[in-house]
Image 1 (tube, rainbow, N blue to C red):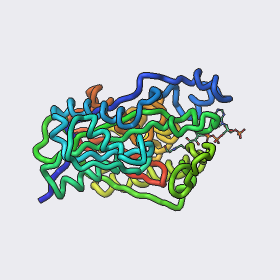
Image 2 (cartoon, rainbow, N blue to C red):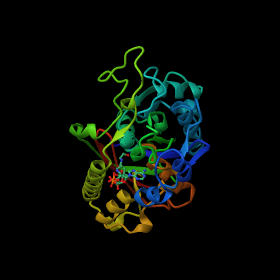
Image 3 (cartoon, rainbow, N blue to C red):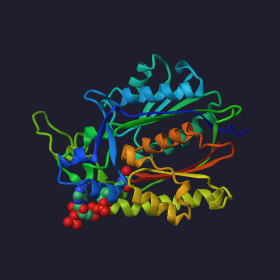
Image 4 (cartoon, protein in one colour):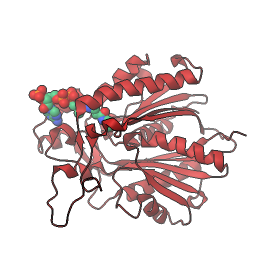
Length: 330
Ligand code: UT7
């Protein structure tokens, strides 16, 4: 018997502090004009000193639980997608469990870079196929500014900090719930070097007394990543729509990973999706890695744009490389 997975509640959290393009003009040689025209970003939220991934995720989770009408203790699983956990160990998911005041759940951190939220939808579906009574928190959170090289204008203008959460379970749908119709995921590890944070890992360890150098921070070959992002997001979305016997006109809203407005527009154009169907939050948040699509979905719900029957298509791409697409019907 197939158990359908439903998104019951959504939430996100973005730190209070906002860094504008004008603020960045004071840090590196850049301009509001360059950042806006090349990326679509106007401002991004920045974590407060000491504000970690687990803090932001716990708050996003509380909001998603409230939206779902559930208590934290009802959760059975916590999957936290992040590349910037609080520590190597314990996992940030364990810290979230503690901050939610619960114990004994199945909790883990997972790294699928910017594709994490959509990878998480598939993992929740898989768990629910085995354990139909499960109640899964899928969260995606990043304090990317903790690994930002503030001397590198090619990357430091792009990223922001935020967390997004979704509560997923099986059983009967209620009004406003989103059925996860299908998910397609992919990866190509041979291209990982184009977007990487090396320093401190077991492949690139630091010794006591070493000075932290630029290897400790995010490196990206932007032009190459751009090309792969457009190509792979387009292809995986086309495949998912075709696999489900749909025409692209059957898609009501498109939520692409928010890394660059030009990438989002290029993918939408290749998919023949009109501008009004594309959800864009990039101007206010920048690239918050895996949480971008979760923020956009939560905002879309809060704005009342998810009318009954509405089909939402997601396309994501990130480090690894990883990419994927999901179809959710409300
Ligand atoms: O989330 C994971 C996936 N990430 C992505 O999908 C990001 C993909 N890549 C991109 O979004 C874009 O490649 C960037 C936004 C990172 C860069 O845009 P671009 O149009 O590809 O610029 P570019 O790297 O080709 O650089 C063009 C010029 C260069 O100057 P020259 O060599 O032509 O004189 C750069 O030095 O722009 C210069 N530049 C800047 N100028 C002002 C690069 N960054 C900046 C900056 N301000 N912040």
